[in-house]
Length: 285
Ligand SMILES: Cc1cc2nc3c(=O)[nH]c(=O)nc-3n(C[C@H](O)[C@H](O)[C@H](O)COP(=O)(O)OP(=O)(O)OC[C@H]3O[C@@H](n4cnc5c(N)ncnc54)[C@H](O)[C@@H]3O)c2cc1C
Image 1 (tube, rainbow, N blue to C red):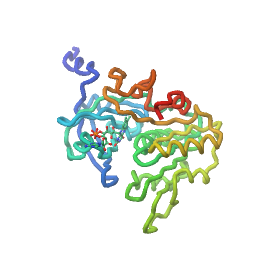
Image 2: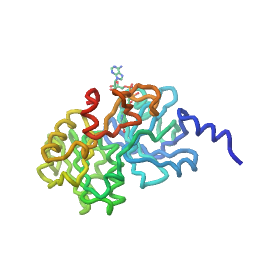
Image 3: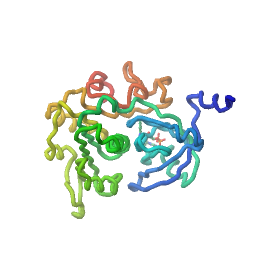
Image 4: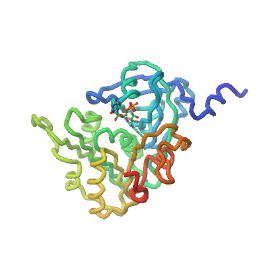
């Protein structure tokens, strides 16, 4: 028998589903990694997404905001959200506490074109909280390791206090199937054992084949410019550079026009764009 009440709820694209915080791991002073699970077990088990997609998170009484899915679709039953306190909704989310319920709808956006990228090498370049969506892509590639040639991660943080997923990323340095290059901008007390400087300096430590590599970038605006310059110098074509671009999004489904740029909606045509797409939408950068 069809459960009409449930069907009509699922048919309403604006209706958030109930979701529960099952674990939270502090990352920095203002950023927490939340592991969440949809309350409806059938929805929790059937939830699927592409790396690079996002969800809309609702905190009752505070509002809704877009957050990238930080877990890989290869891991089922839960969703990881890495949330930095930035204002009303994100602050309220941090205050919810363990086991609290909140609303979640999605996944939305195009995600990375992983089927096109497979068979190639993958270079991931992340800065700061930009590691959140790229963590999903990283683990997708590591869980499907045979589908990719080289996998290279470059991650830069301001300092050790600002370093996200620290234990997890440091432990990758012990694996020989992923080249993990981690850097901090500042190390005032000389306690960081790795490189100190900007993420762009890590390009000196790798041999990249621009013909067979896709580069995925996410980080602060200044990082995009410098990393893209490096990639173009290395000979990357604009179509092999993938950027995650954030715009204030409201509906997430291409209706409200809050995130429109030219003829594109960043919520459905993005947030992942090739550099080629981005330079043809001047307003977006
Ligand atoms: C596709 C996409 C994916 C994203 N993924 C993530 C993610 O994985 N993790 C994450 O942490 N964020 C992510 N973001 C960003 C996140 O959506 C925003 O930080 C969030 O919308 C902020 O909402 P808020 O209600 O908490 O902040 P708001 O209250 O809306 O504040 C937003 C901005 O306004 C400023 N502001 C707030 N109050 C004031 C004030 N009184 N005076 C002056 N300025 C003020 C804040 O400093 C902040 O910069 C993503 C955004 C997009 C578009």
